[in-house]
Image 1 (tube, helix red, strand yellow):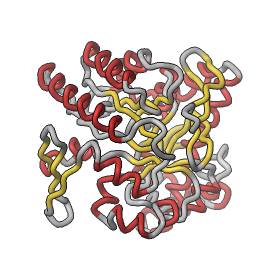
Image 2 (spheres, helix red, strand yellow):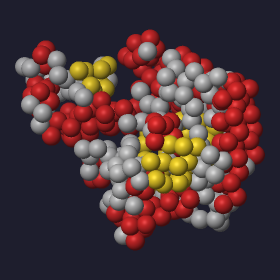
Image 3 (cartoon, helix red, strand yellow):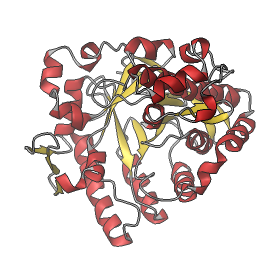
Image 4 (tube, helix red, strand yellow):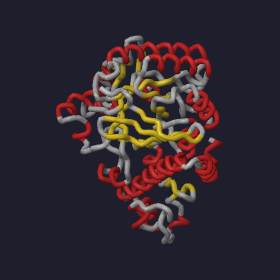
Length: 374
């Protein structure tokens, strides 16, 4: 079996383009992955995703395990068939739920015992069985189990957590060695906001020869500048022959800052969540469609966008749908935001190929630089 899963194509500084090779097609990078937590990108159908050129989406192992169940999905032909999705799928390991649902999780050397947020039942996730669950789902890219510490965790607790993640990584790689199956297994670099721990994490994870490398533990309460500084430091340590995935981070500014550091893959709920809340990303900056100033605005949402929403409807109509709580608002807004993100990623790939990425980055910083104050 070919074990060269990532092909580097071009560089502009640290920014780079490449191809991630998966069982469900080649993925051009950099790439943004829409989030389909329970096997569905909220308010968006698979044909919408295909129409806007999304080659890969993300699913959530924890949620799909609980409902409808990974074994049922396997019985029904896997997540691709179940969700009628022909592209690639990346699934997380449930590790982020240790952080986001910490009150329901108990961590031990063996793994993580969860109390279901649905019915209170207890479930154990281990480095081994989360891989089995992801295999049942038919994931193209699987993630190892890790622990994500919150911002503000001190050095001692972060070091203890990193030690556990490192031991879980060894168990995961032993359980699923390179070439075992069609799904790729990515390792995750943790270490909080301590440079020596980040360096230690990179050395440990790289030594296990995972199929790709993810950076976790960011966007957990720190400032934007702290996140970017830690990202740049960590990414500079990663080997160039593996795909680099920044987990759960994704404003437009985050994308270009991440790409400038050498990140290849992104996911975030932000474009669809904000769409449902009336915040839309455009080539001229953010538009809060609920504002009264759009009540009689006959212009398209974004004059430089060719998505169905912008080709067909006015800002006035989109505002009407939103303030009327019409379900169509969710679909049209989400379709546009995802299109904007994927167009931005395509523009980044083209800019890198033509050695003009700095100009694109500066343009996005001008549009969305106010995020740096967050």
